[in-house]
Length: 246
Image 1 (cartoon, rainbow, N blue to C red):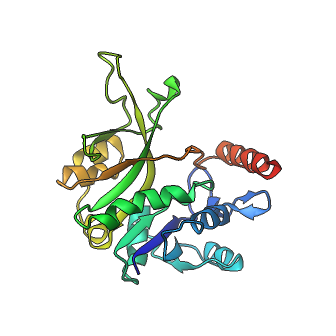
Image 2: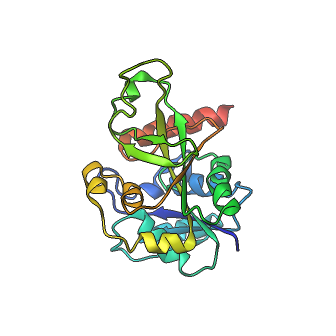
Image 3: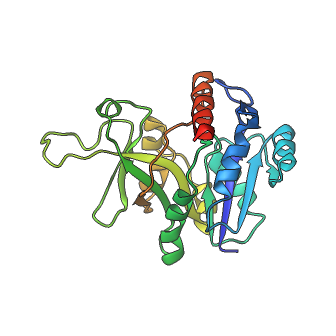
């Protein structure tokens, strides 16, 4: 196996309990994520990693694969790592379970650099921000990279700061991650780091610990619709309805 895709799906949520099972046009949200991810040309296996039997049964009902994982995992990455231990892939992809409209081509994009170069421990994606109001939105995570496309920093603040506006471009980090399997297991054993805790951004633990993250500028249109609240869920339903009409 070269590539394992894992979708972490936790039942508990302070803002939207049981959101993987939330109905969107007659299907649970997790089914949208799974079916879109399954269209990737690069995955050899796709598994939902969940802490709840209801989610596992829902996935199996629509023909997907799911595994029960520990309910005590602090992050989705830890849940992904538990599943990865049961397989022997080169690369593991953490596919966010709350993004029902993920483009399968983005999964291919985040994996390809790690297959081409085993020395790259981790990868993720970015796209250019075009709405100025997102510049100072702390929920829109920004990233800056070096000339070779490796992350210099991720932040909820505006980076780079436009002291000079000429050629000023801002990129949003897209939360999909690829890992060399051995690095994924190593990452989950690393202690949380100061910048990670300050910004509440897990990927900063990688940079603070001295490892590199390859950041690919996606060539696809990014639908920034992560479902975290009842309002997000309603937007997802409206978007799904519009897609069905098209």
